[in-house]
Length: 439
Ligand code: SF4
Ligand code: SF4
Image (tube, rainbow, N blue to C red; front, side, top):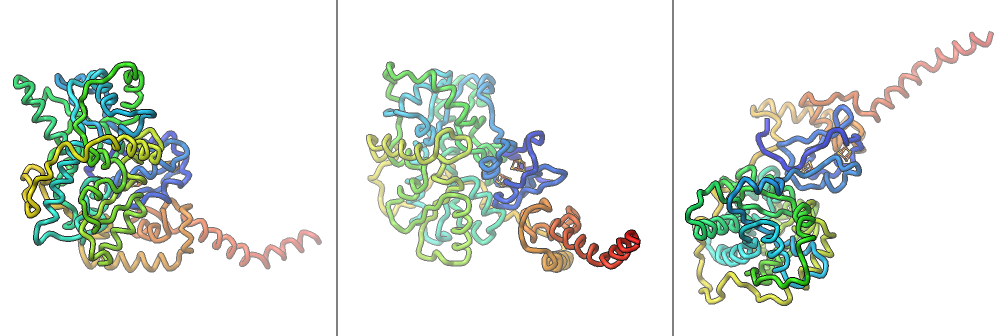
């Protein structure tokens, strides 16, 4: 039984069992049982694809509520840079940051500031000898979980640095302690404003061995509607932002990799492209690359399911916004080129571990027998991958049968064949009965 806490959940009353999500889930985590979808918690990576495709809005992303901020005496907002791309006609990030303060936050710490630090430390990390290349970014939690479940040989390629959200949380907490020496740690509430459900799951599960520095993860959608009435254009905001171009660029695909200032990188977005690239790396087809940036959402974080705006519109707005910013406000370019130092606290706790989801049995002989049984059943199936049986593919259906979760009779194509055969066999007797009736 999985103990992993997921943000993506099902509203069973709304689900019609239409199979749309079944066919799109990249990890085959969904089955249709008793007329509605069921999510396998061990396989789900919180990518949000099922939320995007469900026509009945039966899949939803759980996140913390803004009202929960009341539990803390000192509230710090951590806006993801994708938040700035949600607003039309925004020419200054400070309007958003001022809006957060006006809403009731006591302080704001931009995640884009931490992103600039991660970019600097990534450049240093890449100069190290003996690291597994290409290094894969650890910023997208969907990608990290996908690798841990499906790509055992790539676990050591994942960069062991914490993602910007975590580092922003750590620095925001330090700043809060300095400004309020009398506060206890539990009085400080660090609240990340997230474009995606996977960040909620990341925080709730202490991913990669470290307890998160973030206390609450609220939906960008909720914050957007709370900020709209507060962002008054007639009131010039205080100069609050400390972000540069590099930090803001992290919001869309390619932004993280372009901050490495070399061209031996690849940036891919969209879960299908991500899987294709990971397959290619595992097969040794990317030997000359230094760094791989992968974003599960199309267009990058701006494409998360908790964002409001069309991702490509948000991306264009961010390009306009960053035009007037310095390259960075959080990193000095006077560093030595040979420097490989990264502070210990910026590393994740453990190396990424492989957690196989396709393990058929702990006993090797039993697993082999099950595999043979799966292949034998799969041979007999029609290979239409129609989903009518409630499994995403015929092969997954064969696996479900062997695991005792489905019966071969549930294949409607085979059932149709059986009925046809039965009727054909019965045909002479039926004709005789018809002739007798006519007498
Ligand atoms: S897409 Fe999935 S969750 Fe939505 S109604 Fe269809 S089966 Fe149910
Ligand atoms: S969130 Fe992604 S992995 Fe999880 S059930 Fe939905 S489509 Fe599958």
